[in-house]
Length: 108
Image 1 (spheres, one colour):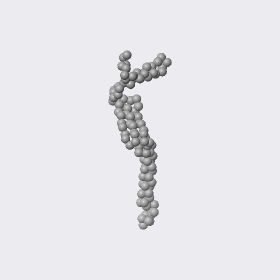
Image 2: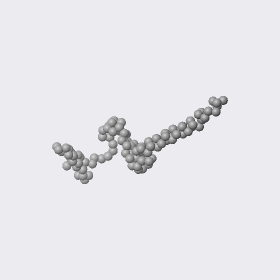
Image 3: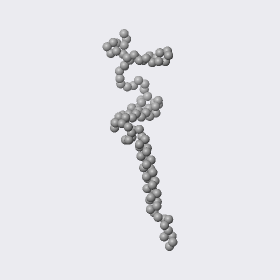
């Protein structure tokens, strides 16, 4: 009968150990969420670039609570816009940008 009276087999000890383990896991998850640049605790505006320079590059922009994702298609020169001017590289390596005047044609 001594086996039944042993206090070392208390089932509550294992429950307390499980609660401690879950508290540690919850703490680690909260740290991970706080460090995420696109998470709810981050600043209002953030830009996240995934795989920079690769063909599958993605840019995610967070403005307030709105997320916008841009994905690369691998094609060069794709997009919307209008020509704004011309850039020239000088012999010494400097770059010069010359804006185009909308009233004068570029070929004159």
